[in-house]
Image 1 (cartoon, one colour):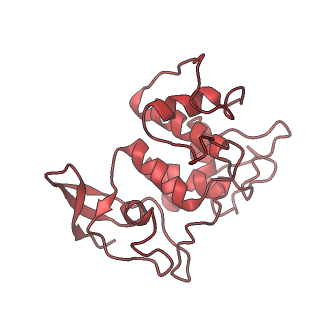
Image 2 (cartoon, rainbow, N blue to C red; image 1 turned 180 degrees about the horizontal axis):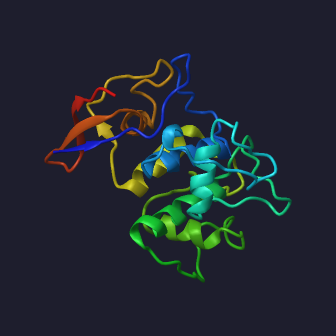
Length: 212
């Protein structure tokens, strides 16, 4: 038995939009929530980036994740909070998160699972997460590091890195995510405060949805 806290949510209209891309600001907010912070944490960003001030909805998260080394800005001093994050960028942030909370070490590889990631600036991060079993490529054997990552892909990757979920036995939460969706139980895992148990097949199974 155990409890897990939600680290993401849907939109005000009740939808999750699993096939929508995620922005750098939204990604920063996910990591910040997982680290135990929220918008009430009173983290002021000041003039750290030219395009983010304290009035931005995710300034607190961008401040925290930048200070923790999960995200960096661009050479021109900007953060580009509303730019969609790529699979390579998000994978890099996940690796740095694991380095921060679990102390995993960076490894330099000479052989790579994905040919289209070989030679990419994030090649070693991608390869290490692949070998850990946290990320996978596409059916055609590519990783597509410069593709924009989807919200559904984001939650699946985060759950693997956190070693939690998928949450089996969960009800449908979002109108646009039915049980037929490949990430249904992963999305439930990330969106619900819940109590769970581990069954005989070592799957995480919902026991109770906790009130926020």
